[in-house]
Amino acid sequence: MLGTTLLILLALLGLGIPVAAALGLLGMILSHMYSFMPLNLAMGQIAWTSTGGSFLLLTVPLFVLLGEILLHAGIANRMYSAVTKWVSWLPGGLMHSNIAACALFASTSGSSAATAATIGTVAIPQMEKHGYDKRLFLGTIAAGGTLGILIPPSVNMIIYGVLTDTSIPRLYLAGIIPGFILATMFMLTILIACILVPRWGGEKVPANWRDRFTCLGDLLPPVVIFSVVIGSIYSGLATPTESAALGVIAALILAAFHRRLTISMLKASFEGTARTTGMIVLIIVAAFFLNWVLASIGLTAVLLEFVQASGLSPMETIVLVIVFYLILGCFMDTLAMTITTVPVVAEVVVASGWNPVWFGVLVMLLTEAALITPPVGVNLFIVQGVRRGRGSLNEIMIGASPFVLTMFAFIAIMVAFPQVALWLPELAFADK
Image (cartoon, rainbow, N blue to C red; front, top):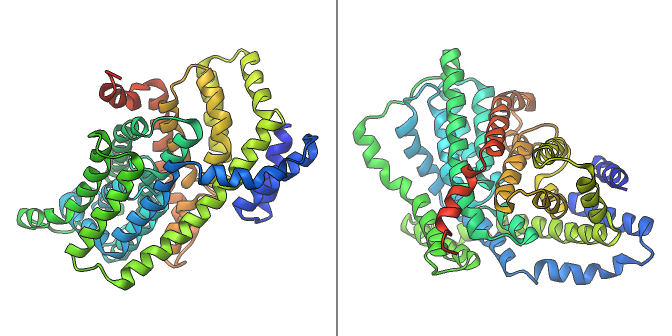
């Protein structure tokens, strides 16, 4: 049954059918093949309960809108210029700026696609101007963009929390340290590459201490947004949903301060939010229906019984799950992969003794790896789109490959030392 399910799903995706439609069709096919009841009749109720029944999901369009406002208000451009003045002296110059700017923007946007597109739009024009190696430079943008779903606030973490009934505040705290460790490891990868092959590092962008201190104000917006969103949650002033709304208000105030709060800016932000949110909601509805069908026909229970009967140790189970996600991520959209697999896989992993908060961070890392692994690495296509098709997609794939290896190394660290993710939430919630 499991093999049939995967084969049908891959076949539907291979035919180029949109992800939401493929998931819905798969649910209907499995219902027809394995159920004695017409499960498709419940689709309307599932569509309502999966979206309208969860107040937490309201954070999705709010965080998308937050990122859109920061992009269209030009705040990201100023932030990138400021970061450049502080880190461009390192071997690799602006490639370090790409990672650092992605990490900062990730702390406000909650989306990997938005992070890669925003920083790519600002950074790519500098690539040829300063003589950087194209492949590695583009790879830093694709890899840095993945931080958008690991460093809170993260849309994908919210969806994981809703699917597994895991605390969003704990997930957010769990993602902070891994997010910034991974960003540091990305920068070390650049440093090593440019020391070994100095010509990849391009020209250094000159900056004196006066320039650096003058531009500090341009680094404040992401700090303000992060403080408002995350600070309001842990101070008890707001729920995660309310904190997202506060973040949008803060972004509007920042846009007004920079005199970019215009009708055209708001229109562009609302249109981008509507497109992205519509795609996400369709995938959520279809995936919830598919998950309900899988549970109804007994596949979830069969898989859980199989793992428990196989006698696999907790470590063997998690290694099997990691391999499964790495392979699936090569062929499936990351959001759909998360929504489709997490309800089933998380139950198996938690039953093996692993912490659900830790597993949430691990899922984000595995999803990040999927974003830059061909043939369906979304960030690879986003960066190629930002450079408007000039050059080959293979250049970005080659440039991103060292960072895929860096991710694999960090995944191994996370498995060996779960406290990397769990220390901060356990410290914050020690008395609860």
